[in-house]
Length: 477
Image (cartoon, rainbow, N blue to C red; front, side):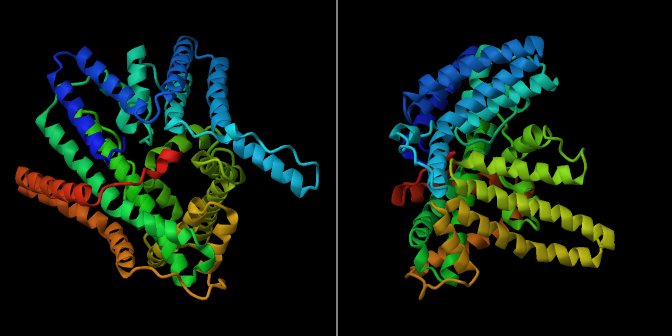
C-alpha cells in the first residue's frame, strides 16, 4: 500500500477508528503494532518471516548487550546484520563484478551467477537494519540505558510511518513515545493530517508527473543535447526531492496523528550554498546516522587533517553503496566525498589567506556557492539515476557541451513548464514556509483550517483525476 493510494487512506482511516476506540495503553499499542505488521505484510507476506527472524534475534542480542556491554556481542550484532544485509543486497553485485573483472583480465570467466542472487530486495531492510544497529551501538557506548521491552522493540522497528523509508531514528527519539501512546487528540490529528496532505501533494502532483519526463530522457541518453541533458538532470533532481521529501512529510504527519513526533528529514536542500550544507539539509537523519556511527567511529576529525579527509571520503563511499547494489551509486558517493574534501580544503585555504566569515569576499563566495552547488549536485544525480556508467557518462558529456546529438528529443511544452514551475517552488519554499508560520501565528485556528482544506482539496482532485502510479523511489533502498 502506497501512502498516496486510496487503499492506504482507507486502511489508515479504519486503523485510526480502532485506535480512537481503544480504552487503555495496552490496546493502543496492540492496534499500532498490528496495523504496522498488516501494512508491511500487504507488500509481500513472506517477508514477515524474514522480519520476524531479524527482529527477534536482534532483540536477544540487544538484551544480552544491555546486561554486559560486551564488545564481542556488539561485533556479533554488527557482523550478523551487515553480513545478512550484504548477502541479501550485494551478493549479485559482487558476483557480477568478479565475472566482469575476470573477463577484463582475460582469465577464465566463471559461470554466470544464478538468477536467485538478484532476488527482490525485502522492503525497508536497509532502514530497519540501521534502526536496530543504532540501538546496539548506543547501548555499547553507554548513550542508551533505558530498558526496551519486547513489545516496544517490535513497535520501534516496525512503526509503519517510518519503517520502509525513514526517517532513520535512534531509540531515544521514538521508544519512549511509543511506550506512552496517548488517546487521540483533535489538535494532533488535524496537525498530522495537514502535514500528511502537504507531502501527498508533493508526491502525486509533482513527483509523479515529473517521473515520466525523467524516464523518457534518461531512456535515450544518446539523443540528448546540452539543453535536454540539463533538463533530464533537473527533472530527476526535482522528482527525487518531491518524492522523498513528500514521503517523509507523510510519515511525519501519520505519526503525529498518533501523538508521535518524528524529526524533520528535509530542510530546503536546494537552497544550499555548499555541498556540506546540502548534506545538512538532505535526508538529514541518514546524514546524522552516517556521522554518528560511521564517521565518528572512524575517528572523525580527531586524528589530523589527512585522516579527517579520508574519513569523509570513506563515509560518503559507503553512504553511496548503502543506496544500492551498483557501482554507479558508489561513484555517486565518490563524487559527493570529493566535493566535501574539496570544500574542507578550500575553507582552510580561505582562512589562511584571510577571507574571514562575514567579509565582503566571503559573502560573494557564498552567493556564488549556490548555483555552483546546484550544478554539482545535478551532475551527481545523473549517476544516481542512470542504469549504467555508459548512460551516465553520455548524459554528463552532453551537460558539459560535448555531445554529438543532433538535437533534443521532442519534449512537450507543458512538461517543461512543470519542471521550471517545480524548480521555482523548491527555491521559494523557505519563504512560503516562513509566511505560513507568520500567518498561523496571526490568524490562528482559522488559517490552520483554511490551509488544511486547500491541501485536502488539491490532494483529492489529484487522486481522483490523476492518481499516483509511481512507487516511492527510496523503497528500492
